[in-house]
Image (cartoon, rainbow, N blue to C red; front, side, top):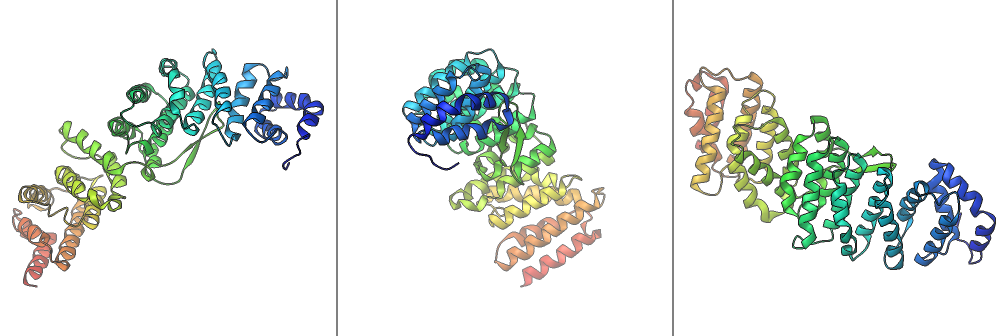
Length: 420
């Protein structure tokens, strides 16, 4: 149906509205298309839409909140301008919906509030409802919790960290994440909050904790790949986007590093390496962050090198080491003598573990790490760097290393580099 004339609404109202209202109430699958049809005949502005919604509510088939609130949740997605009069109109029904006993209707009301918070320049108009929303954070219905996370994210995109309501939103987010039992909630929350992390860095610890708590398949879907849809009851679909395209990558990596250091972790698990790998995909995006990345690497290098010696993590750890080398060339050499000594010490521990005379390290780890050492020697030699000397010192210090084919090859390559 195309745009219609000014008198079409009256004709539509008289001859079609009652029958259409019955269809809207009964044919749930057709409801979005039927409501779009109503808006086609209404005056195409906020006041015209308010008239249409009031007329729909007057129909006996639609006056039941079980039908009317879900209709509003659909209609609000059709609005082009959610400012002024129509915002007040929807807010009235949001407050009404939040007061109802039905969890599904309350979830619909929060969904409407989220759209208002995202569209209205004055997000503070939504904040007086925070008391009620905070009490709903403990609701057992997963879509209420998911909608609360979406609402919180919409507000945080508008509010600066200094705003008085922001701390309450942080607490609400954390309480939902910690109490949620459905992975759906975690995925929807991570997806919606990823773009807020740069401005709201206090969320980084809980965001990182939730990401690590996911099972391997769920975490992989959040770190890369395609966007996907979670089917809901209140909302037909929740679109979930991988977080790595929107998050504050250095902030997440730094939060993970702080967590590992605080826990006095001795090595990295595969999940830690997966998150760090996703973070380092965008290391080159901000040249000003290069020193911070280098500092983080120096802090984590003992853990990464240790992971490179273990079956199950060696390949991922070596890939991460290579990423640092390729993106921040001076990362392994570090910026000062103390940091360089720390990196060399971690490298020595890994080489000794893998190649000493009595080593029982897996052959696959020996081969992976040998390829990495060979790469950094060749790459840094070509650019006139200092890494070949570091590697050569480490290689020649391995007890019984001369009996290792890998070490003999590296020592020979190192001496050729030194002569050149």
